[in-house]
Length: 246
Length: 246
DNA sequence: TTACTTAGTGTATAAAATACACAGTAGCAA
DNA sequence: TTGCTACTGTGTATTTTATACACTAAGTAA
Image (cartoon, rainbow over all chains, first blue to last red; front, side):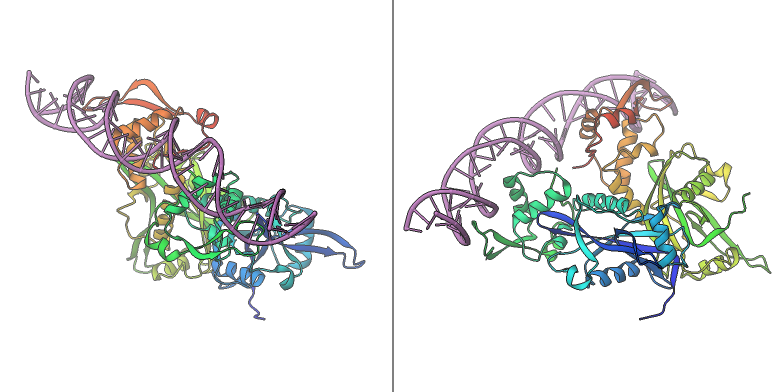
């Protein structure tokens, strides 16, 4: 463990999204504070993954560090989306208690840079790695610490805008996916429902979504064809324009 | 002058855009460092408007404070677009000299939150107010301090994306404007050229762009009709969808 | 009065979005 | 083996939207 000191008024928070069971999920860590004397649990809630920036550390690197620590992954999509710098960010009693106990050196005006990350949730098994970290559907969030509810909302909005301009959805899917999965993912993030035939017509025009000679297996219905996304082809063909709606 | 201490590792920078003579401009302040002994000028360059966040100050308020100070305005469009937090942001010799002289208490890892602001440049006369502050066309920028070149580029990109989703362009125009001005502004920000008839057809569908019973005056050609933007009507009619391209 | 400059307008064609219904196939259970 | 379930996969007609394009109008200035 490296003994680098942390910058007391600067942190990063990673909103890590995954897609599973037809729903968008976010990775949260359980936070539980016990009374120092009685051992009684004072509160339980959840937070996104965050940490203070270290002395001499780039903020992007701080976010990558947090991400690596929680997911084990390194090369996944990660992008800054907003910085939260209100003085009253830490105003709930339990947040103050928590900080007083865990981070006594931290001032109470902490500015936090929010990062949005997308992972293939089939690859992240939080249960086995971190027993206090688990996935929650974004429409069924538990009690959240600090201003993390606002952060998640803002990250979602960022995502909704961004996926209409860039091919980010593939970060949320396994390497090989079906068109129904893809459509489902769009519908779920954008909160719309799309016509299957028209959706497939559009996908058909995107040369960078490539059909494999391979079918789904072990499903109790007609097996779907399997596709991959080729960033290579994407970069070469249509860097411009990536519209699934309109 | 209030004696509030500033947070040494946290600042805000405002990229203030204006539109004039058919070009997008950015407001910059001249920075000149003299040798303490000889009085000789060591360097001259320009920076965007920034300042450190004060103790107990929300970052949005810090940005508003900077904006007010430089433009005299309070209620103009202002939005955070990116946070710059690399450790090597301040790597040029002249930036180090400047900080050593002017802000000796400041550490060399300063995280800066970038804000984008849009003003009606006919209302801001920097000459009279601040003799070191003036407008520069974004395609003819002078030598810039710190990482402000990157900041301006990033702010521009933010603008380009944003104006296609929200009616921000009107912030850059006088209250009353002509359709040619509006079209010119779009062309200039997006770097495209638009067909006049098609452009006007589209504008015609936007009920929140309202023709006045009034014409341009004092121009050496057919005077154009004058329009206003009604945020009221906008809010009521199409919060959704605001496309000038496609 | 003429020249100059920008404003203002309509139509035909091409492209894109939308709406919509039925047959195919794998697994499973009776 | 048959039938049920559940999801896959496909084409066309219609409406809407985008695009391309050229001439007259109105004011100023010389």
